[in-house]
Length: 486
Length: 120
Image (cartoon, rainbow over the protein chains, first blue to last red):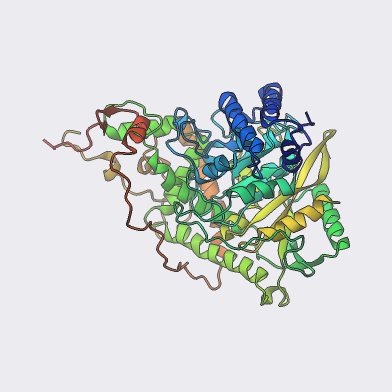
């Protein structure tokens, strides 16, 4: 068996097809790794040993028949908010503790058709609200690089599972940074695709105008391979985009790529050693022939974050209204129906979920919706237009009339923080400063490792975020691979 | 609910003290009223905590009030995202699967507490 800590999908594919080992042997190796490491890391909420082995046997039959597809026999982890028929999907919440999915998410159908192996469901902040997995109702996940620190969130279980060699790759979801930030903290690659590029049919909704399913892998290529498998139009998702042609070219645009740095946006709050890791990565890109230039993106970096923390709670309070103890999930008995609702929701939702529902209720309430929610929608349009202008071929006046192919930032202002360090909700929200504008604009972004910084004698990974134009994942992969190669 | 009006409906909407206009500040948010609107039971202890936290959050998000310039409310292009009205699946195909998820059922129905009562 290869070393699971360094194995990639690409290598496993080669070995499986060459029959160096079987899909069942590979799955068994992962199940052993999970039994050894998961008790400490707590990346998985549930491990599907029996079905994983059955799926692996079927994959071996596909391989034997010469019908192997890119992910046949590849063991992956699935975030706890993605539905697989007949299996529990709890979204990290007590309110869905005993909920069993009644259908497969579109991404799961695609992976089943490829003969992928599902190892288990991974831990997350409850209803994908948080930045550390500390908001999971089932206890936090630990960072494999330093177990006194958070893995990031909300897809912390998925990122930690990949980083600790407990899954070859993983599915996550990203509403404001929930794939990119944990990928940065765990030293893996995480992609948030263009809004609408991957179907969300069967994803438990958090904030519907922001949510996007994405992929996590050890390498850019692995994140790309999983994305290629789940990408595409789906009639069951009304926000799904029509398929656009994809390319596998090393340089999709066939010319020197221009990369923009929003300098003002990086001012203040970024740790000095994170900034120097960022500059070093930029320098390596410059050496590789990329054109690097400063750009102006937003006047006030706090504004996108403020917009996000109005729109997100507003949509959360609306989406989570469906959890009322009537149709599914927890139901707390009471003397009348109003009390059934209030008690079920009071007991079933954790503190951060309750906080967001209340803030969302406020910003949507009569008399305040104009000043908060509708104003936020209008400012969101300005942010979206800023991105579109920056990427448009015609160029925008805000940065000298020339457009760029990608915008880059550190993924987070610092490395993984300690458990309990950000107990103030606002301090936790500030974690997302570089990631939320991407969701507001609906553009794709990837976080790739850019080395480590030292904290208390430990080397902690940090991430380099690459943001692209709508539908231009290819440019992200091209730049990401060049960073990986250095 | 004999003769009494539903407490949720009779609650006044949450109003920050003093200011009732759309540009209101976030001081003095009535969290208890919000919790009622959101159908969420909140303990007194948590209420006290939220009464500190929520105004802080609202104060932070008020940053957006400083943004001026060309603000256009989003006007999405109208495209039909509904499925084609054809080939319906056979009735009752998913009934059992969906009912199984319900906390309480009677036969082929989801059971709930009485919703409407006649006033005396």
